[in-house]
Structure formats: structure tokens, C-alpha cells
Length: 295
Image (cartoon, rainbow, N blue to C red; front, side, top):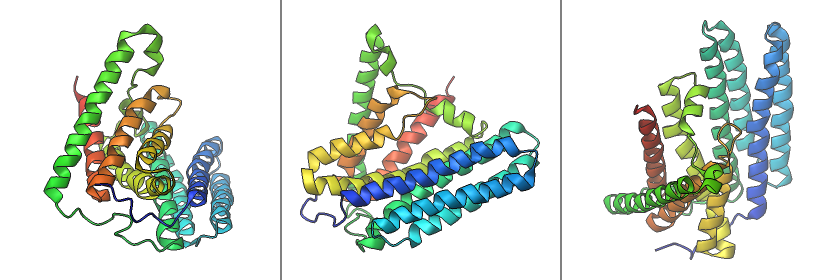
């Protein structure tokens, strides 16, 4: 079922360069936003700081792409969008009457900028540098949509069952408490100032599209080409899981996210369409949000 006869032309160096560019852009903007908090009393100075630091970090990301011999237009566009978004957020935020709403606007913009950076960085290498076709990237709808959706739901259900078994095991043994699955929904809702609209846009729309294109259509085929489908599923899922660790969530998120990533990778290979992955990823996040609102 897995399509391993037509390996993607991009390689490990392209992935490394894309990840570096993504980190420079997304974490760079986060640093800028954090630094700007100390200059809220001086709007002019804050604006200059935003433009200056964002420009330097965006330029570093663009140089990284050029060193990797990839066209820089995609990442350059991503940087422009990110700079404009952060700059706009800091102009809007002080005018809001509620402090949480103000911070929510900034946090939402940071997340969106990160997802844009993730998707556009991968697009720069696959379509920009190597001119990969939509068929090669599996960007087309599945040939049999109903069958593909049913198969995807089955694989997702198996992953959910495995996650439930993992949660039972970690809860049963005291020495495994640090690996218990944390609540990663509440921190996100808090970051969004309690706004369910912003949370749904991020979790059920932006994240599934950007992450599936990057980790499944971009990273997975490179590893598959060199190490085979099984190693590709495992390794790409491990990379996917590692990006979800954060100070307010902890390392307990690794195993559940790894299981989800493995399920999505198998869905991508077997259904040969990124859209089934995006659908399941969106449903998974929607289910997590729905569980979070149940008392």
C-alpha cells in the first residue's frame, strides 16, 4: 500500500535548513515579542525594536535558505508576513481594555507566525527548489475518499487505544508518574485568553495543515527514501513529538504525540493523500478540545 517506488528528490540537508529557518523565524519572533514587553511605555521605541530585531532574525532565516541553495522567495514572504503580524499585534494589543485579551492577541499571532513559517519553509524546498509535483507530495484528494476516511479512522482509533493503554500504565506505576499524559489543552486556552474561537482556529485549522505538510509530506519521504517506510514512520513521528514539548506541558506529551504522529504517517502512506491526515489531525484536536470543556 505504501508508495515507496517514487522517492522524493529532496534530502536531509533540505530538512535541516528548513527546520533552522523555521526556528529562526518562529522563536525569533517570540523573543522579539517578549523583549518588547519591557518597552510598552515607549511605543516608538517598541516599534523600532520590533522592526529591527525581526528584520535581523528574518534575514538570518533567509540567508540559511540561500546557503542551502534554495529559492528564498517563499521564506522571504513568510518573514514579511510574520514581521507584519507581530508588529500589528503589538500595535493592537495596548488598545484593548483587558490585559488577557491583549496578551491573547500577541500569543495568537506568534502561533500563527510559527505555523506559517513551518509550512512555507517546507514549501520553499519541495516546490521551490525541487519543483515537486502535487502527486508526489500527495496533495491531491484520495482516489476513494470514503475508503480512505474509513481506513484513517480505523488507524486513528488504534492509536487512541494505544494511548489509553499507555495512560493506564503510567497511572498504575508510581515511578512513571512523570510520563503521564499532561493536559495540553488548558495551557493553550489560557494562552488564547480563554477564547475558544482563537483556540479552535489554531488547534483545528492552522496546526493540522502546517504540521501535516511539514512532517508528513516533507520530512517523511526523505527518511523513507533512505531508511525505508518503517524507520521513516518512527523517526518522523519522533521529530513530530519532540516539537510539542514546552515548559508548561512537560515531557509526558512525547509518547501520546508520537503515537498520533505514527498513525498520521501510516495514513499518509496508505491513503496517499495529505487531506486524510489533515482531517484526522483536525478531528483529534477537536476531540481533545471537546473533552476539555466537559466538567
